[in-house]
Amino acid sequence: MIDKPILYTVPNCPLCAEARRVLELNGIEYDDHNVADNFGALRRMYKLTKQELVPVLTFCGRTKVRPSEEEIIQICR
Image 1: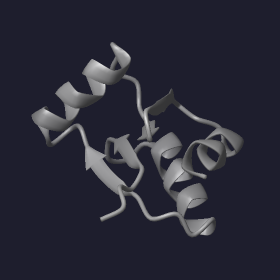
Image 2: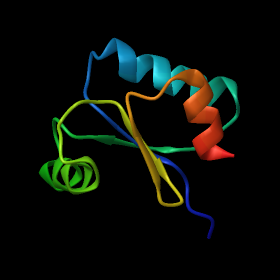
Image 3: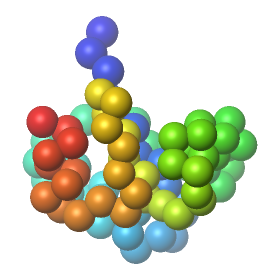
Image 4: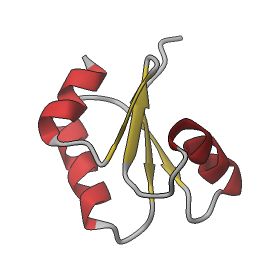
């Protein structure tokens, strides 16, 4: 099994929607973790970043808070 990037998000977040769009347009499969409805996901995100801003993208030991399009592609390739 190959791990997928994890995108930590909340509903109705324009930055989260943009991150999803970039991932999908580039054909990158990912797991979306809604931190508003999942306390465990919120705790994991906080442990990684020590903050609560979204979106957060993590993959292969690399984590970025509010990544740009270029950073999303760089982290996931």
